[in-house]
Image (tube, rainbow, N blue to C red):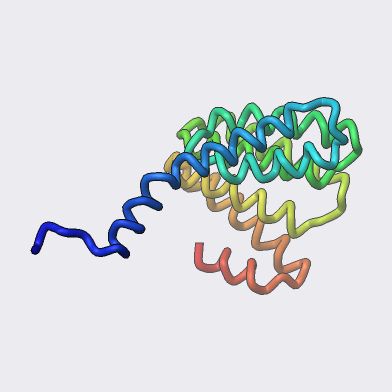
Length: 169
């Protein structure tokens, strides 16, 4: 009979059917953790990190809300690298949404914050991200300047992989 499904096919269809519910349950569970102010900040930060990864592409506005809470916690706890990373993550979401002005503002905020951690490679990565925004906006001169600045950082830090990527940009 050509109309019957094999057990493997039934199982596959079953998993396809329940996967969105499992993902939504995980997102809801993580939200319950990070929204619970009674929990310690380390637990909340971990839940926020996982939540942001799961939601940044499918629920960008929810991810932005979570990143605002994450930023507050990183500032309260003096976690400067995580704070700068949160600005980058927010900028990436705004870039994906086509809101280039906010993306550039947040990349600049990340660069300013990153000065407190003395990690020039991180600053170079953020600068290259700015170059990508300028490229998407067809602002070629600004893109060239950003990519050149990132290249100089990577070369001065002997970070050859990233420098090679800049030569290909």
